[in-house]
Image (cartoon, rainbow, N blue to C red; front, side, top):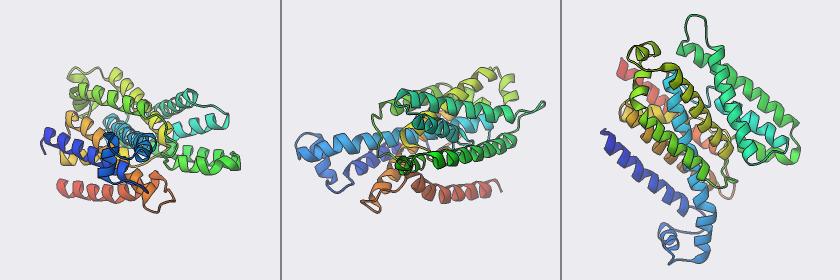
Length: 324
């Protein structure tokens, strides 16, 4: 599909998903929500939409965009479509650091800083452990990331076992993905937007880097600074996503892979389309999570797994058939 057609289609789908999110609940229809937003509808509904549903929907969109962009960047670093923050342990490192901060009584900026430190530290740990004296293969990196993620999972289990009982349920829901307490979505939206712009500006460099570090260096790319920038940016995106909604899997794995199949592998397409599609997916997942068995709210991570696992298996099968 043409790049601009795909971007336009995903923009429309994103707007539709946000409207559905604002209209889903015990009160309100799309027409009533629109009237309340324009100031001609019910004042109570307007307050519900602006104070509760809109911040939550925007936080979900920003988180999905951040995870999809982080996944796309990590797939460039590893040259492997199976890479994403969840599988490589970046999300786990951020979650462990954030949980430690919560247990120590930290709030606000300090939790964000701890999550970023945990995400960046986990990413550097994976790439350091996977580095041999002769080469760094994508398979070795991926395996190291999976083992590191398992280690972070064990650390999370230990922290949950030590956590006070009154905080346990909230911590569990947060770990599985929960937007119930998502506050101001401005930070996650701003960071995701800036990362998308940077990714688009670096698209020619990323295209070369995806062919291999040696080939990119021969073509004039300063590989190490670009790699360091991708480490930093993907860790920042993961950290802000984790502090907004907890650990949500499969978004960074499925979305960039889907965009490459529907559109093309050019990162001028992959970056903006991944951000839009990731945001759209997580808005839909959060809407399902809070409405499927209302008034009970399901963890968003469970919804993304239900949607993401079969979709990724279909995409993987299609990729294999195309190569054959």
